[in-house]
Image 1 (cartoon, rainbow, N blue to C red):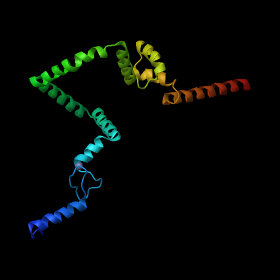
Image 2 (tube, rainbow, N blue to C red):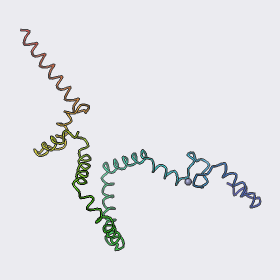
Image 3 (cartoon, rainbow, N blue to C red):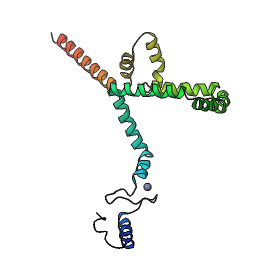
Length: 194
Ligand SMILES: [Zn+2]
């Protein structure tokens, strides 16, 4: 657009460019912003700001996980890409040497720190909390004994959560109990009526 009416001296064009730039605004990083820019940040700074927002990151992670779980082609593509990347890395002597160097530098000195009973206990508790996020800690024992008896996850959840106030399973059991009680009372009243 400026090129068509840019018949004046080079200095005049550059001045009008400058005033136009001032009207557009500038990103804190120094980049001149587009005329329609609404958040006052250039594309790179905007991306950086969004990626630093825990809510945005959590939403992106949820969306990515949902796609991954829902779409078998996405899973297959991810698996193939991961395999290829690992294979490529195994063939790269420099990358493997970096891995070995990391192990010597951090792995060996850290091993005794991570291998105390306390550290192992903390790791076990974290793993349990992650795998048994659905199960209140006071039911861990019951869950383990049900599992040993061969109950599957869905059955264990149904049994344990029926006992935990506030869960849908508990509400269903409370309703069923209530209906049972009503039925029993109705039957007794009917029997006593004769
Ligand atoms: Zn910027």
